[in-house]
Image (cartoon, rainbow, N blue to C red; front, side, top):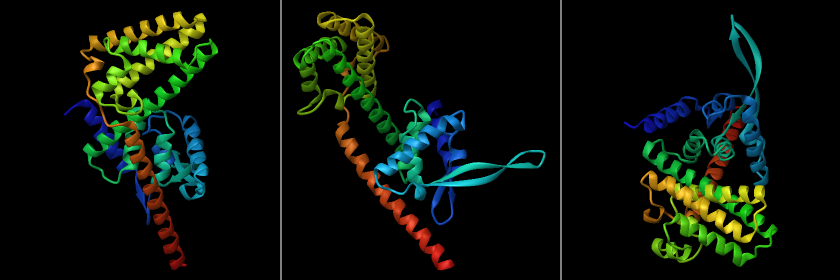
Length: 289
């Protein structure tokens, strides 16, 4: 069995082990944060606040998903002290994973785990790969937006930006233009990047970010920027080819827009499921009083 699969099996088991149930399933933040790759509780708190903000933007109750608690924890020699913890619903855990560091493998796996009702490793791995690709595509969107803004500042118009991007693609894809790559991969409408595999999306992201950094640092202008972008894409391509990866030969993957639509639908279903579970818990509490 591959080392990566062993790590994923361990992650799944650990998340299963810290799962609690009392009418509805829940997790404790103090038990969750080290599993998500955070060394300190303080480093985890910004992700908690972002996840809470996400709930507020959806007009959902933060208290229904993040329940503050005081717990007694053992600190040695039979002594105990009071510690702050948070009781989390599955949806809260999912939002924490969405607002965590996407570079961490644990975060990508947690996104898949908390979004899915199944515990089958194959299903979780497929979902994890989707999450990693979505994260890479969103990062490229931000990088390209910053790239375009940098070029606009230097008087490069929309046509010029397109020309520079196309020159970069020719260098990255071994002589194929952006439009030629769209034809090869069957892209009728939309962006080429939406059907690229993760490795190529990350390659485009790295080359574009390098160009943005060097353009600002050296105050490059239009023709120098184009040469810089070609140079950076050529360098990134060399790294890929040395690893026996030719970007122009990789097949198209599922359109990112379809995956995003599917994930949004699943997110809505998860919200409804969590709401139903919370209502059921409240009903049981009322009937027992």
